Image 1 (cartoon, helix red, strand yellow):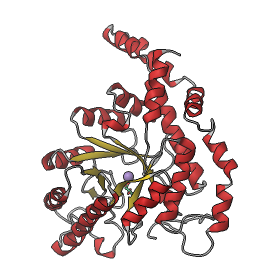
Image 2 (cartoon, helix red, strand yellow):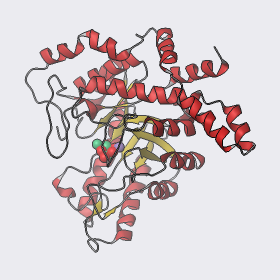
Image 3 (spheres, protein in one colour):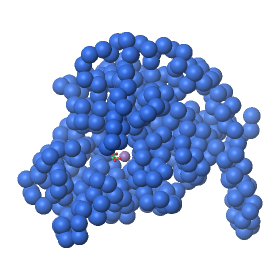
Image 4 (cartoon, protein in one colour):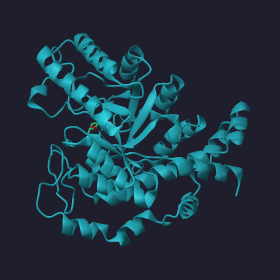
Length: 389
Ligand code: RM4
Ligand code: MN
């Protein structure tokens, strides 16, 4: 085994990809939600399904919650349930986009009373983090405007800064605020945090516990995401990723499905800086929905896609790449990268799984386990989880 292969395996063995609780509930588009049988009815069952993904991949040991979708009476009990199943509760996601009060925005709303309501929700999320032992609060705001003149762009930034400062002050020493940006939708004219620059400016002002999150689906077509990765890493402001695949807008489909090469290019930037593993502090998360495919296998496939892109990035011949770059050998440098990308890393990952006591093929192992049929039989009655439930 070459040194590079051994190094790749060692990093891959420590890689951890956080799963979104909402991936296990029913989801769809604004046209139709196609309900699936056996989906979880509460956060306990969502965590049980997430634990299946970890069981077969060995690389997905934490689950992100979304509040209020995952509201429970006793968060310490939910955390203990996760631990019993071999996983833990990760990032807490806030939700200030589904209440009638938020029609004109939440933290940027012109009415101070609505901003107070939104801020209180964010503070409640930090209380939940205290109970679950979560490190990160992830904030995505649907705030924006639809029409020129509807509201004052700069005033909305002031309101946002004020709320963020209050939430930031509430964070514990080991807690962080991750600010996510998104180009458009649901607002179509201005979005209050539309891009990495806006998120970065707010995080910079807030301090070291505020970091930017890159959701891969939240950019204009053609945006060079790996460039954003490089810049934020350089500035020490890359807090994490919401991985998913987009083709047209915020598609939320399986990461690495439409453009595995983009995922490889992103992982390459991270691998160059040696920040692929959990000790980097970068939260590697999925933010996905499985509208037409079964959810647990959809998550397993997604974790495998991230592992494959990561393995390829780790196999890049760094010395050869640097030598070609230094010599101005454009085609040579590009060839080094493409050699790594074109490597079939599936045997390497199978070997790694064997060493970890896992089945070589997580998809097949899950399919053979009977879990899918079991949850269909068990989860009769009750209200299936979904957006808003
Ligand atoms: C948003 C954003 C957030 C996620 C919600 C469900 O578009 O990506 O990260 O919490 O969707
Ligand atoms: Mn996201």
